[in-house]
Image 1: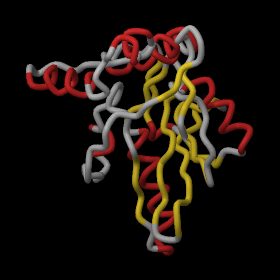
Image 2: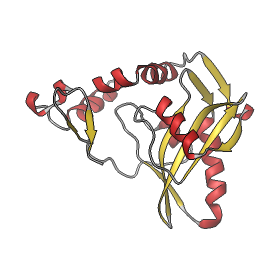
Image 3: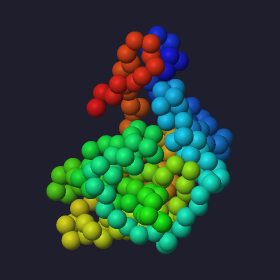
Image 4: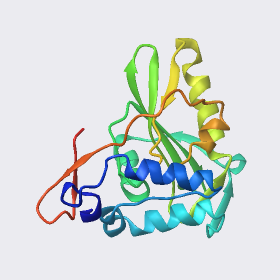
Amino acid sequence: LYWHSEKRRCNSAHVCNKRIRTEAQGLRLLTFFSDEWYDRPLTIRSHVMRILRLSPKLVDAAECDIIELTDSQREAFFDASHLEGDSAASMCFALCNDNSIVAALSLQQLDNAELQIVRYAYANDTDVVSALSKLIDHVRHTIAAKGQQLSVHIDMRYDDGREFEACAFSLVDESGPRFWWVRGTHDKRISHE
């Protein structure tokens, strides 16, 4: 975190610009902060292995059942498997295979017309073929009668949005980089949200 602090005078768009330059060369850049590495090394390793198609466990979504998670199940799953941990949600659906949750998607009601995906993750060391597609289809079927729209914000530091594009999402806008405060030794971020 020190290298991205005001003490180092790092431009707030530095990581964004670096990603754009990398993509222009046909490469993909993944960016993680030091506190993420210290707090969630298994989640980061699992994410990288999934991108490289080297996950130890591969499951087909067709072999999974969709279940709705309770708040405590959702919290436990995302705290263990999402880089940012859990987030408040109105509802959460998961794919279950052999009595284990292998992927989950949580949503927050923004208003009567919009439901936002606030978390999506795979279980650590697991990849699930067509997981997002199956979960999104289920959500769209669930909300179809209400005429609601689905939206998602993606952290481009470690996700490129391709999975969502494959599920008929389109890029509407790119927001500026998020920011955090740090306390003391710069080893822990404090969200402004």
